[in-house]
Amino acid sequence: DGGITQSPKYLFRKEGQNVTLSCEQNLNHDAMYWYRQDPGQGLRLIYYSQIVNDFQKGDIAEGYSVSREKKESFPLTVTSAQKNPTAFYLCASKREPQGNEQFFGPGTRLTVL
Amino acid sequence: GEDVEQSLFLSVREGDSSVINCTYTDSSSTYLYWYKQEPGAGLQLLTYIFSNMDMKQDQRLTVLLNKKDKHLSLRIADTQTGDSAIYFCAEVISGSARQLTFGSGTQLTVLP
Image (cartoon, rainbow over all chains, first blue to last red; front, side, top):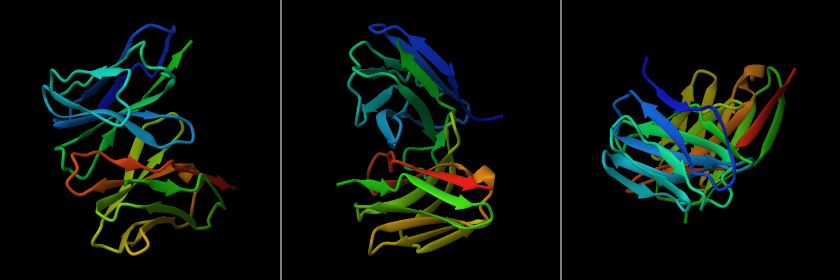
């Protein structure tokens, strides 16, 4: 059963702590993406990766970091430098960077207390 | 520049048609997408249209594209309560890496 999984679904952290959100796909897709969603706003791109061991900053990369050591995994770390980290985080993937269909995971809701 | 705009809310009665509108500013857009998001979930791709088309139909969904006015719409026929969700329009720019630019989403509420 192919798809994108994100864990955990809900995450609570204290202010000042780093936290890592997991994203795994078994679709054999080359490209992976991280978006942030805030109420009443569209999705904003944080980071993306077109191929293993390569990634680029999106529109709102400050305070976030990523790695792409394996094709199927693209974890996102929300660092203490991110001023307003409470949000819904969505991971997505595409077969290849120029592909038409982008598939999304179920999301992780991060709340910083 | 890139900017995608949608109205925030739409309410319709069950059985009526819903029309969700979207405007975009980048004339070099190649593909335009409609996604559906149910509460607390990820986005589900509903349909997409290539910029050289002006209409695409898929069962209850009809997408209309007016390139001259940079206007995209999604019509849902015979709207059901299960269609209640947020609908996002998104564009991809020719030659970009990419990566979608999303509108703010339209919350569709279907009233019984």
